[in-house]
Structure formats: C-alpha cells, structure tokens
Length: 199
Length: 334
Image (tube, rainbow over all chains, first blue to last red; front, side, top):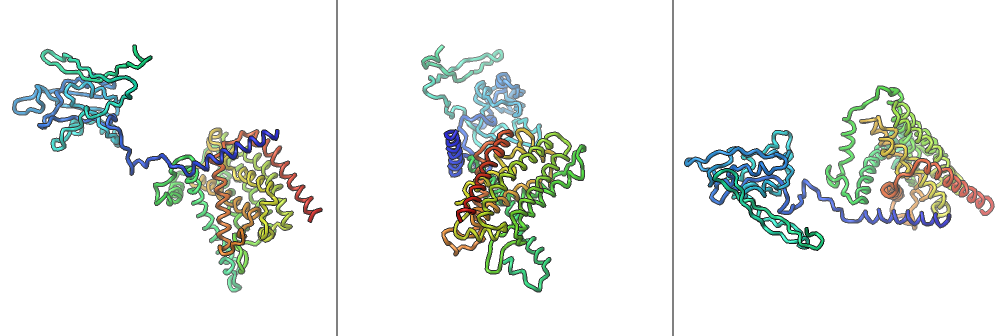
C-alpha cells in the first residue's frame, strides 16, 4: 500500500515537472494574420488563367478542365476567334470561364487536363468573402492581368514525391476532342518500382 | 498608507468606506489580471501563446472580456425561480468579496493594512466561504433544469466534505499561534513559518482549498464534460460574470489565507526587511495562485466517488491526526 502511495506521488511529480518544462518551451504557433506561413510551390490554392508571352490567352475553350473536374466546379463557354479580335492563338477562346471556388476541392485535375497549361493552381489561399456569389470566380479575377506577366507555370513546381517511393515518369497522350481538334494530355504518373509496392 | 487615513477628524464610516473602495478596486483588478495570468500560464504549459491580440501581450484582454460580458443578453429560463435565480450570483460575489474585509495585507508602524482588524478573522473567513455555497447551490436549484441541479448537489456535498478537512488542517496553526486573529498568526511566524511545523496541515489545506474554490482537478461542480456548465449552465451575460468573478476572488482569497497561515504573511524570508511587507505578501499570494493554475493544467478531473472517498477517507483522517499530534506536542512538549 505504501509502495502504491510513493508510486502515485512520483507520478504526480513527473506530471508537474512535464507541465513546468513545457512552460519554457518554444511555442509552435504561427501568429497567422500578421505572420504568414510560406506554402510549398506545389500547394493547391486559388486558380489562375495564364497568358502567352505575347499577351494572348492560353485557354482555347476546350472544356477539358470542366470535364475533368470531379466537383463540377468549372463552367467554360467557348467562342470563335475572329480575325479582328484574336484572344488566343487557336481558333477558339473561352468567352466565359467560371470556377465556383466553394465547390472546388483543389485537386488540381483541371491543371493536369489542360492541353495548353492555361489553368494553374497557385499557392494563394486567402479567398474568404461575405457573399456566396462572390466565390464564383470569372475571367475578370482568374485571368492574369495583361500587365502582370504570364502567370505561374505548372512546370516550375517540384513534384514533391519522395525519391524512395519510385520514379516519376511523364506521360503524354493525345486526345481527340472534336473532329479536327486534338489536345495533348500531359500528366505525371508514379511508377512504383520499390520492392513490395510493384504491381 | 491605509492606516494613515484613520485620523480622528474623519468619521469612522468614511474611513471604512474609503478603505473598502480601495481594497475592492485592487482586488477586482487583481481578479482581472489573475484571469489573464491563468490563461497565459495555461497556454504556455500547453504550448500555445495565449491571449495576445488585445493590447500589448494581450494586457487589455480582461477589459475586452468585461465589455463582452456586459453586452451579452441576460437570460432567465422560463422554468427558473426568477427571484432566487437573479439573487444567487450576488450571494456568491458578496461572500467572495467579504473575505477581503478581514485579510490584513501588511503591517507598518501606522498599523495593520486591513479594512477591519477582526480578532477572529479566520473564523469570519470560514463562515463567509460556507455561506458562499448557498450562491452556487441556490443558483443550480433555481435554474429549473437538470444539469445545474446536479452541479449544485455536487457542490453542496463537496463543500461539506472538504470544509471539515480544511478546518481541521487550519486548527493546527491556530494551536501553534494561540490566536485566531490573522495579525496574531503572522506575528507568531516571525521566526519560523508555519509551513515547516505544519507541513501536513499545509498540504491538506492546499488540496482542500482547491476543492473549496471548485477549481480543477476538483471542479466537479462545473464539469463541462458531464454537466455542460454545472450550476451556471443557464446563466449568461453579467450574471455569469458575477460567478466568474466570485470564483477567482475565492481563489485569490484562499491564496491570501494560505499566505497568512503558512507562509508567514508579510514577514520577509531570511530577514530581507529592505523589501516592504506588502511586496512579500503579494509575491507569496502570486506563488499560490501560480500553484493553483499549475495544478489545473497538470491534473485531470477526479471521478466523483473518488473525490468523496479522498475527502473523507484520506484528508479528514490525516488532518485530524495532524491536529492531535500538534495538540499533544504543544500540551506536553512546550
């Protein structure tokens, strides 16, 4: 009985020592609004529609992103380029391009589906607002402004897969969208060569 | 300073009123910062930074909390007994504040730094804290819902069982000092603090004081995991704030009493008389408050039957034994 008493007292002292030593430890909290954490470049955040170096829009209005989207968050309505008003180098451009950021699950499949690397997920993540409607981002907010460069390239990102899990190979395939149109599907797949994972 | 006010030309009631106002102001300010102190210390022990948004280092947090508390809606449930429901928080608050009327904070050549120098201060304190139970149990009963009622039943049972052991633990000190006045007890500790000869009594007092103030790990009365909010579940706004103030004032009060009874009150340790007594008193008081917060962060809440068993089967016998041994030594030895 006495042994139990001393064991109990010892446990108490250990507990008090633990909390007291934590008192002096470094606190891991980041004071968020004043200090912002640097996200990885591959972070999946708010979308962006890129431009070519000459200022033309990359988006050709093919709607592949809308098809790939698992959350049905993307609406694309394409239109024909006319000789007087060429928005994109191809024949078509996106007359309307809308993403409902409340539906979006930020999976990045739109980015992978895009044949022209037009839609890109940026590391921006602060998009809180007061009205539901304001979460539907149209071209006015998605498209990189003409004077702000071309936007973020998806290739600039590290793929972030640990080396010991296998190697990453790039796969390209060509998809026929409509008669006379083809698009390149380009994505990365993970080849699992490591022992036990293969197959 | 306080004693200097008692000039013959000023009527007594003015002096008492002025002293009360001053002490009340100091005590309520201490409450506000004790709350911030607790939140900060708890946060640091849990690897969080704690309140730091309002003012530098969160120092204006108590003011923000008070403003929030005042502007919240004050609800009375339709099943409640309206008069008792509204009156109960005031019982808690009044008894918690009343304790500070007899606590001497320091002593100078001008006299004792207290509102009233009662010659049986410790009895007055115990009497008031016993009445304080009514605030909690009436609040729970008059809310007219089940969780507050359970909380108030628990509170009553807990208070009765722990107050016995607490009183027993204190009697040892009273025997050694030969007086029930706080000033006399502190004077008796000029050479040795009573924490040394009354170490067992000290430990029992510290434990029972936590139970008495309904703080973790003995906060069964407001155990939010079982009883939502315990006796104050139905309270909101300012009335909830009154209970909150009362709880913290009780904590400060038991820390003051512990300082007076066991840590030599305003007596400086190692003859360091350079530092005035009030500073020593506040340091010791702060030390005890820190201990209570430390306890809260470290220990999980007790199960209710174990709480009762601990009170009746461990603390009460230990305190009684301590009392008997002390009495025997004083009677036959000295």
